[in-house]
Length: 313
Image (cartoon, rainbow, N blue to C red; front, side, top):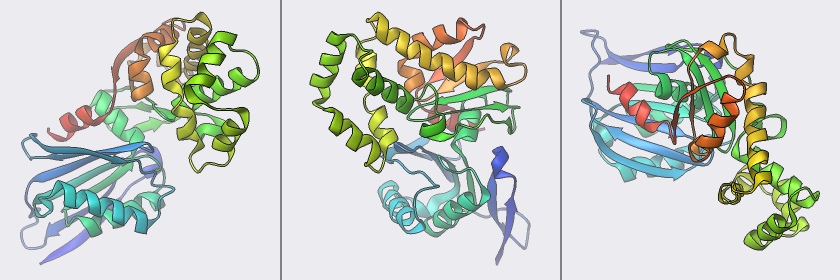
């Protein structure tokens, strides 16, 4: 016989929602040993099935999930498909879910309920993608963890929990240095006449878009942030142009000034990044930080490898 003990901590500060099944007779957890590690971003979700000794048994990627936006029914369908694809569901003892949109206890509880209905695991932890990034980048050490992907975020991490977070505010009010911010700047500069004419012509030709097309995709599509971020490869391919280099540098500089600089002692702390934008623009990102007296300690494309290491200990 089993009973449920619910441990719900302060998710707003990056802590976990933990629901643990205990054996009431001997006080020990009674389960098999495989773990599922989930890094759920708005653009894509990475899933890893991990043995108890840290061996990767299976990995896969699925469409993005934002916990704040997705309904319970949609999440159930999505996660059920993943369960069937991964297999070995009966051997899963732990699910560690780090997700975009997991910023409040209400949202975390919604995702927890869905996961517990899909996997009969003994431990299900639901945490923010920001805590996942911090654990991936720093393990049990302190530092400033940053995400630069479709969106952007950052936090001051003490090796256990997030102790301060300058809010991202999303792609309308914030997300400095992110894919959506870079794409927004590219669009604006192209149609306001700031881009060099040859670069603008190349951009229009590459994406075959007119101003009405752009406005429709930005203001009427369900995911304008993803659309704007989808234009970033053009910037990467044209970094040789001084104007484009300056554009990207300015966006990363804004991220540093409006986020990193707001953490006490930032100049003396290690600063690390994860996410596709940080990874593919590492050189210019490092340039932006060094110009303001900061040093980049690590850059990874995704948090998954670090999370595997964290949960293998």
